[in-house]
Every structure is written in C-alpha cells, then in structure tokens.
Length: 222
Image (cartoon, rainbow, N blue to C red; front, side, top):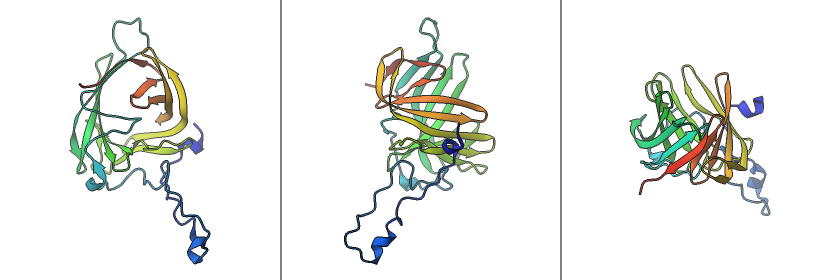
C-alpha cells in the first residue's frame, strides 16, 4: 500500500476555502459541503452519544439485527469459510452499539461493535475481549464512510497493538461471487499490521468478498 493510501485522515472540511468571499465578493459561490471523510476526526477521541443513532443502515455496511451472511472460499467444501450474524451490542463509551458476530471454519469467534453517526458514517468501537473505545486509551475508528470516495484513507481504530488502516480503492466496481454478481461495489484495501487485504462491499448487502472468500448466502430477518 502506498503512503498516500495509508495516511491517517483527520481532515478538516472545506470551510475556510472561501475566505476570499468574506470580503464582500457578491459573485462568490457558497462553500461546498464536506464529502468523503472531510470534516471527520479519525480516530475519534471522545464520541458524543448524541451524535449517534440506534441503527446501522449505511447502504454499504448495513447491520440489521438477525441478518446472516455465509462466505466460502470453495463452494464445493461442505463447511463455510466464515459466517456472520448481526446481534444487539453493548454500550461502549456511552454509545449503543450493534455487534457483528463472525465464526470462522475453525470455530474461532469474533464480536465487533459498531455504531453509526447521524451523518451515516459507521464507526468501529471495539472487539470483544481485545479492545474497547474509551478504555486504556482506545479510540473508535471509521469502518465505512457515509459517502465512500476514491482515494480516501482512514484509520479503523486506535488501541494498544492495533494497527488498522483502510483506503477506498474503487467505488463503482463489479464483483461476481458464488451467490451472484453485484454492482456498484466499494472496494477497501485494508492493512492490519503486516497483512494487506481487500474487502468488497455491495450496496444494500454489505461485505460480499474478501481475499479469502465470496458470499454464498445472505439472509435478512422477515
């Protein structure tokens, strides 16, 4: 991954770029609203619970409780490579979270806690048994922007021993997995420590492909 993609984005919105208009230039255009990760402080040192909503419905990262995904590296294998299900999560740093519970083929389980702010950005608040925002200096990082923009990079979390970054490398990709083909797809290049991988997210579905496996089943609650 290039240093450009790995940069920690703590961008300041484009306000101030129109300072020239403040001197009375009547023909100046109004400032553009922030896009991508502009204006976000990542990771966030002190999340305000009032800034968050109870549901995670970002179209690229929807977490409706009861939703289940199954991924296989080889559809001929009798056991899934990975399954994931959404569950109600704990309160973390004063914010009510939603938990994504993953189970690998070897039985290893992980529970990651997420919350969405009022602008639609999804934040990673911790992993059960590993780290949690607000404890031991850990801070919530960004899991998925409300408006993914090509070239944006951001830190996924800040905690002792955690070195996780992501960069948006595609925003209108087409991906074919065992279940079906999807477009548009947002592709993130994710680096954790020395390991770099790609994650593909389809609109309205969520994660459909990783380096290791593709989606074979997707069940939503009725």
